[in-house]
Length: 303
Image (cartoon, rainbow, N blue to C red; front, side, top):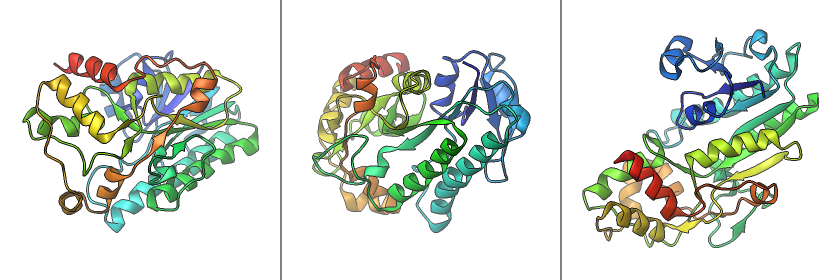
């Protein structure tokens, strides 16, 4: 596989790069990316996702594109400006990437583009698979547009897979980095009543799932990037507290998190019981299918 990767310096990107052979990278800052990623990656081309398509030479010899770039939804309050950044980084960035792919003299055969389980919205106890209806809130709307831009590559004969990612857990960053401080102080706890379902995945499994989606020619369209055993927030809280040998009984009220995070707080309370049907039916084997084994592996590394 000759691969090109966007978003290579994010939380998931470096894990994906380890599974690839000298991949090409697109970055706003090639110098900084080289310092962070080291000599194991191939050429690094400068690309501003909002400014236009990547340089045509970046696609030379490339057969697979992994598109991970996008503004974090969890950083800062959702002001009008921040929401525009979240949308534009995904929608306009993906549009420009696909335009570059379709214009390239040697067109890649496969695009594996990130998306998010936010496309399903707040669905209670309903089991959600890749064919489940989508929601209409802000995040769902962003995901729908994001996926539409990625699927435009299919008009040029490119196979497109869409990784609808859940909460990514791993050491050294991601969602868990924000959860650990209060739990280590013994003041962690469930969100509200804790009954909402959390669709999660270990970062190592997510990186492997990107490669699986690229390798399996029969995969196209949505792929739920979550572990096969979603957990309720209260059960996740107990598992995390148990692994840290700390209590976890102080529930976080919605109104307090709303003051802290603004509109994003609602996302924390949404319930999404997402099942990775496509991954399982195409033979993907999760290294960390349950939350206990995932947290044990992550926190052993982080200790």
